[in-house]
Length: 150
Image: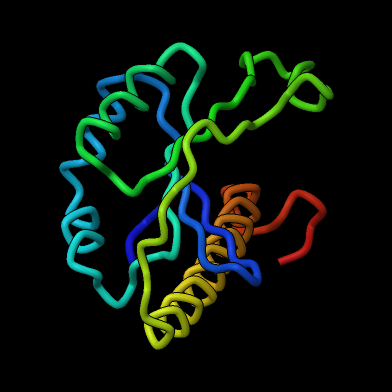
């Protein structure tokens, strides 16, 4: 399974979303090996693939995907970068270009779902490891925690 910014699973399939903030960032994504594998229908191909972009690069991304006759979809987010906007009703994600189905083989979907679950598990393990490491850094130089415990 390849890395992705967002992965989602529902009754309609497995969705992969890459978040792009500039034209350069968008074009650089196509150098990733996963896109070649998605073209040939690798067993770890998601059912649908979307680029989530800013309004500023929406037209550029949509035109490039149309030129390539790409099955990828485009989502546009309205987030301005201000924390007060993050929880606002004005913060939206809109589908600008519907993705076409990439994965047409049901047996691949089971493998993709299993891979996604394993990745989610590894992300949780990484978060747990980070928390433990953070706690260890809070130890004083004599090997004791600030509260006096070992």
